[in-house]
Image: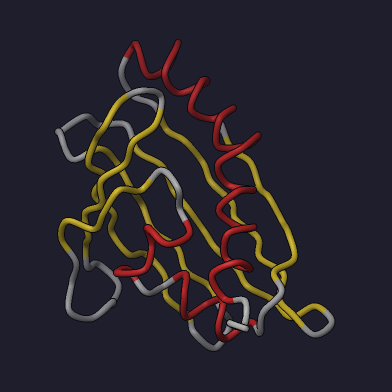
Length: 150
């Protein structure tokens, strides 16, 4: 289960990338994230952070491990999974490019459900939810968060 979404964001690419990679600000633009529980002092490959989500009527913690951080290319990639020992995981990659006077954000994800219920039920439902609503809403929220205050 993999997918990619690309949308424009009305802000400079550097500002968008800085917001995406500022772990403390993740809940500002991800409506399903209720908080950052643990975070490293510095983002370097291999560091981990834990966030709390609420979706599908459930609350859970997700642990992410940084795979790639390339500020000069505006690439941010990580592997995430529930923080309960379940072997299922997802690989996420965010790329920010320049388009006109703003940015273009591409989010790609690949879900790897490993247990029976995640393969047959939860994984497909979550994948549809991400594709249809959550990821497009998160990208749209980046523009709102970065909009100049009047």
